[in-house]
Image (cartoon, rainbow over all chains, first blue to last red; front, top):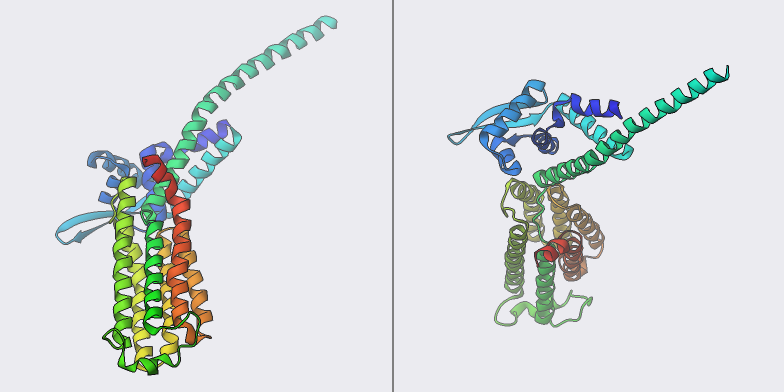
Length: 99
Length: 249
């Protein structure tokens, strides 16, 4: 049990918001900052700080482009990010089954 | 010797008690986090679903489209004045002068257009209603993505059918519309309920069977656009919407 809990906390996905962002990126190729913000109901600053963590961890990639005159940043999950997400879910499931 | 035994026995009981209490605490915290983890998993599931699929699509719009299609087919039977499943080879000749003040081509196009517009309007109506109930936007990125993917095979099929018609291959027009419509649903179904994909596959099978029976285009349309829409519409409604309706009312 202890081992499983350690596994859960070892990734940076123990946070609800970061897990939410990753959930969206798992099923979509690229998702814009605004779309994530809207779906999760967050403020700009709050989301930005969590995204920074994911970026630092190498879980997500970003691209910046102009849509009309507005700059937009979109995100995608990296292979490492997908693996981390899968592992996290597996650990969660194992915990639930064990409990 | 006996004393040593007693000591070890006491020590082991003490140890096991200690373990038990530790275990006990573990269980307590586990029950607490268990619900939390379960909630997290449910949230992840819902997020993945909402961010990748257009789930405001209403089953009732399918039912409505099916009803309009059946009414449209009934209108054609009335116009031609023939019973269902009868051979329709002769009436085009008979009806060359038209009925109800218009030739049969005009009537068919008019009938089909009215059915299409009514189906579209009721589809938008029921879907908007469902989105409002769910507290979501009707038009989002998912809706757009679904429509674009729906449109690709549909436009290709439309052109294909026009060419069939131009070349006088009338018998294949009806099955071809069903096949391309089915392909469109399979393609667009990736971005909404799985049932839409299944409806698409059923339409394709029906269209392929229809290729061998070119005289029964109208029956094929009534079955594919009428009955199947109603059946799958009800299926989607009972699977995904009844709950929402109950919760709201």
